[in-house]
Amino acid sequence: MKKHNFSAGPCILPQEVLQKASEAILNFNNDDLSLIEISHRSKSFVAVIEKARSLALELLGLENKGYKALFLHGGASMEFLMVAYNLLDKKAAYLNTGTWSDKAIKEAKAFGEIIEVASSKDKGYNYIPKEYVVPKDADYFHCTSNNTVAGTQMKSFPETAVPLVCDMSSDIFSRQLDFEKFDLIYAGAQKNMGPAGTTLVIVKENILGKVERHIPSMLNYQTHIDKDSMFNTPAVFPVYVSMLTLQWLKDLGGISFIEEVNNKKAALLYAEIDRNSLFEGIVAKEDRSTMNATFILKDKSLTEKFDKMWAAAGINGLNGHRSVGGYRASMYNALPLYSVQVLVDVMQKLESQL
Image (tube, rainbow, N blue to C red; front, side, top):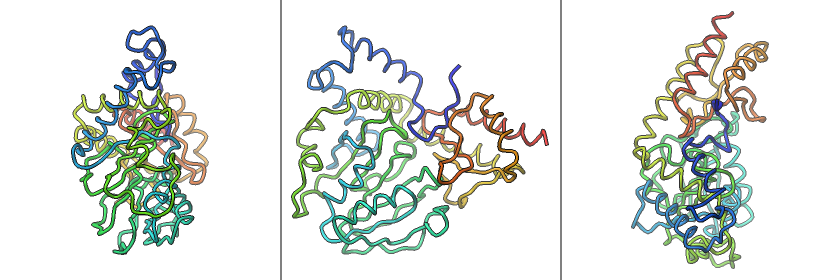
């Protein structure tokens, strides 16, 4: 029986996606060839990557609106660098809400002046700053929509006079937003879309070409736009599985449908965290992430007992990030509501035994 997978990433994937992907490894499109041994320039794979790019734009409501969808290498960590390489001319504004935005700031400093408009580092990133001003003369404003380590999530985004760039690695396709507000969105696939190995970038083409520096071909968004994400060999398997996952989401009813499911999962778990006398959340309630719920045991002496109980219930990946400790339940799109109920039952059982 498959475990209840609360891993923060690589993420849980839909069972039907895993089944189709496994079949493609052995025999893709009934061609008696494996997906991972055919040419990436064959008609079969070109159709895959074109469909993946099209589905990404369709689900976000960005078709025919000047945006391009790219599947690139290097994860979100590479995008920390690429965003600055392509957009930072003199200075950029960053909101520091966690480990990943902190890393993005570090990379961007190599290309120009970085204005940190606000930070929650003073309290271990356990909240999202609310009062800040984005400079009108910045080249762009960068934020991270969801923070997997601390378990916080931006519930709203500022109106800016400059391009809005967002790292949506861990909550992309999980909730409906006005995606046209964003000029560039990037997301490592392994958090909520597919296996590790590819990165989705959605970029409004008219924000490019405004820096004077030479940009190496592999790090230039325009290069990948011009070559339809095929400038070099793409990550064939991760792109294929991402395409299957996006099709799965579309067939379910799209982002609006999955948002309702995700809200139910989060509400169920957070209600138990707040009710149960043994547990408590570790971030500001108004900033709690729908994707990554973080919490602790009030009495650490119960840790061994609780850990054995949830492991025995078939739960996987519940330990918190090593820098934070405690527990982290990652409830990505493919995690069923039933899995959250199993965790809640274990939490209630622990309380009843004391």
